[in-house]
Amino acid sequence: MPGTAEAASALRDARLARFAALAAAVHVLEAGLPSPVPGIKPGLANIVTLIVLLRHGWRAAVVVTLLRVVLSGLVLGTLFAPTFWLSLAGGLAAVAALGLGALGRRAGGWLAPGPVGLSVLAACAHIQAQFWLAWSWFIPHPGLLGLLPLLQGAALAAGLLTGLLAARILEAMQRKAAALPAGSPGGILPP
Image (tube, rainbow, N blue to C red; front, side):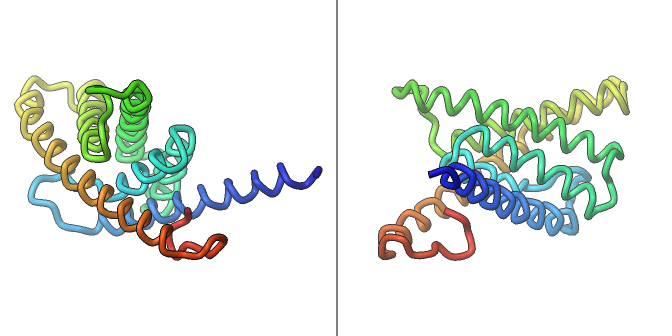
């Protein structure tokens, strides 16, 4: 059938757009939360990226991440501002780390991280990319190095939190999918 491939592609694009919109909404909401240390947030939008990676693959996670960064930049008014570049660097580093983690999952054995391990890996890569971009472009001061352990510790905690939440959401999605009759719509999160 000539229209089947186009329909599948349109369905996939719509699914990724919904995931990106959800991730951007979470990112925008999180931007409004107060933080005891400037720049440290839990990264709850990364839950969406992790779910996309585990359900739809690495390329889909990259698309969702890029769309989230651009959409969030537009909504928050930070598109092409320093925070946009920091978000983009962190997002790209995180999906690169997720790609490496996904390769480990394919290899199996002790290299097979679950959602929590993948999330910690991505969070640590995210903060490293942001730190080194801030160091090289904005604040090339030796005093900034003193913040790196605090930032890395926050990334570890955020990665654990988002990984645990993603694992719970994935389990709930699997239970719900198993309980639904074949062909039923899946609710607010795309399949």
